[in-house]
Length: 271
Image: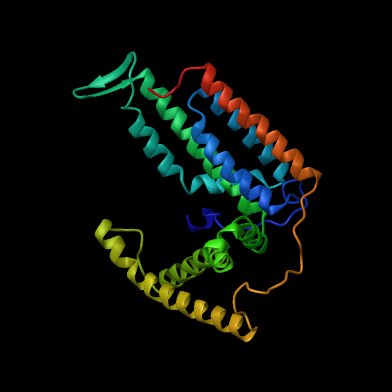
């Protein structure tokens, strides 16, 4: 299960999405999330799904990686869909005592499930095709106007990127500790919920110790390299926008305009 969590993983490549400016990718990801919730009917949602499929095809990332990212949140998708089945109006499909399922509830469940899947897949494209260093530079450049308010933009971007970068490392460490505990006879899969929670204590303690040691080593390495924040620092690789980024923004603008148009012309799908 831990190996199915793909958050923070970067897959090097030379696809069109890989070659885009990270600032544009980050801004378009936020725009996609916003307009994904602006889409209030199936017509607008279909446009966002189409845009997502185009981006997935252009990313050059194996489909198996996207399936792994979905597998980790499959329970959340199913649970949310099950809840939305009972919220909706329209023709009654099934009922038992105070619970009933209507065609509107079925539509709500499908709509919300597709929305969550699109949210996870499009966010995965950003981390799969953008290195942690590029993400740091992109977030720092985008938040640069906040420096007027004396916000430490560089430090915030650095902390966010380090946290994202260490997610796969901590998952790998957790898997290694669990394997070592099982090799010593630990039983982590049988018994009730209370017993399983107690069996995780021998995993959490060494994991916390390892995490603090890793954080201390990283801080020591940064200090030895005379790191004192972003003031006066230069970059080896400068970010430059190209015609590819302009084309991506134009295509995204067309799809977003289509979502707004669909919201104005067609009634909302959620009831």
